[in-house]
Image (cartoon, rainbow, N blue to C red; front, side):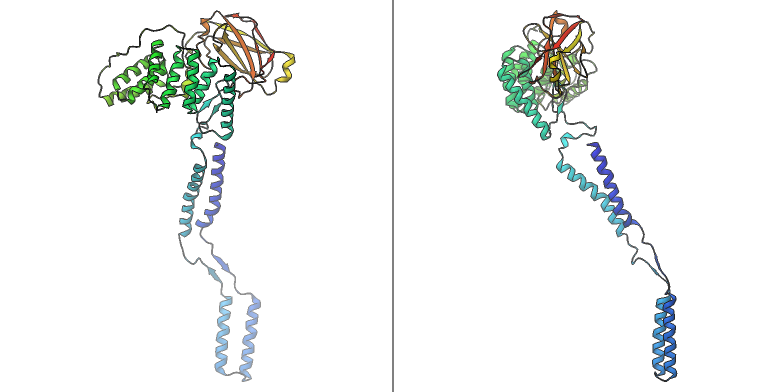
Length: 464
């Protein structure tokens, strides 16, 4: 886009220069040479003939005088040098040039605006951040081009087919729900999150996402079941940042500014220092104070009930970045922050991934290796995951407790497990989920944390 704009600007300036320079340049004076000697000789002969006719009395004196005067006038006209000047010293050319300088760029900009989706254009060269491929990091614009929309729709179709064959895939239902939420298909998002909530009842992350989707179907209103889900999530995890933000926003929209301040002040306590969301929350609290004419500290009277011990359910950075609470929250989108950034590396898993010689020819354009640590039993969602662009095999890998999975699905952190299963998958850069033809392998038995000689062989082709 930047190259196109620069090229178009340069060409416009060149064309304007070609048109404008002649308009503003003063006309040159053109000198006309005197009549050539041949013309003067003709006139001399004519004068001599005229005098001979007068001597022969062929013409009268009056006719002679009139003819001679006519010849003298013609000689003067043809022999005297002249200067051709412009008819009028006019500024019309300058005015025309000035009008072209304004009209041409403005008209070009108007044509570009009328044919381009401005939502996709940014001066920094990026695109509107709509849907993100949670494995590859690829972004699909909110006003995507037809090819990108095709990719999104194909990914949704494949994910839906996968879930019809694997209805117990909790991670898949969450992925589908969040995709539907971002694409504003809120009713479908409700169905997906509701299915996930049935598979993992009591999960606050799922409950909050379900409440968000239901609120969007109600015109961004949390009344009814969405509010009940938010309160249930906060009873389980009173530090759930999205639940606190949504609850505060709902109270703010209903002009209950004191309660909004209570939720947002709690939100400030759970946001890590230095997080980009802090300034926005403080600004929202200040706005609530002004609208509610509230001076001084606000006593926190919020009661969520007994705290239930659960593994940390922090939202993955991609979801925090993509989905704002209720869409119209005065609290801005949270910047990408790794909740494990402040952790020390205490648990690691390292080893090597190789590929079976019988599958080398099936690599084709698959160039990204996904290595994940998963629970030995129960929830199969990744605990941690890393992505490696493969140039050649074998590939060295190292996982640790500071890494985060693509989506937090309740598997806990690495240091909460004694043993894990390590899986590896070689797929295409733009695959939204495991695709038919991807190459896969895993450890034959559970491995203990801090193992450093793990070996995985890609020996299986995914068939569906």
